[in-house]
Length: 247
Image (cartoon, rainbow, N blue to C red):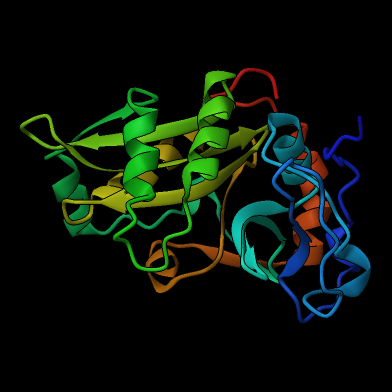
């Protein structure tokens, strides 16, 4: 039976400089890849079947791409494979911690991998503006968590309630941050600072936050061009992970 797993991901460095969406995967009700309108995205990359299986996702991240659900022609199960022209990253030793944030951090307790499901579901709250985390994403990353690759940082307030957090996956020296949330002011910043501390071991690791925002820039995120990111990625992947099993 034909497989819809295609692991030879397109090389994002060959994509036109003005696009961030490298390829799209879409499937029929049986899970078989669909042909797509070649005008939607870079034409030679549109006929691309792939899915949310762990091997597929890990191969994509190792190639410098990341997935997000993508609705196309009424098909809500499509996947967009992205590699932004400008990538936002943190160097763990350069995360900016303001004096006020240092003070607020004392109010919280931070844990790692204590409630991955609660964190990813909070990040995927359908009431969040521009939300993209659906059940496919939750299922896929929960599986990655179960095999020791995806991780969560939980931030708890004084009464033991989940105040904020983040989740992502660690491959070698790259932590691909997928999303963060807060219900208490600055709790997501606390999660990021804690993650930076865990990864700040002098090995040259990076936290890949994918897209730049004002919030991230204020905390010290830098932008790196797609070609440079893909160039340093192999050496980053060769570093032993901190949180994950050998990846």
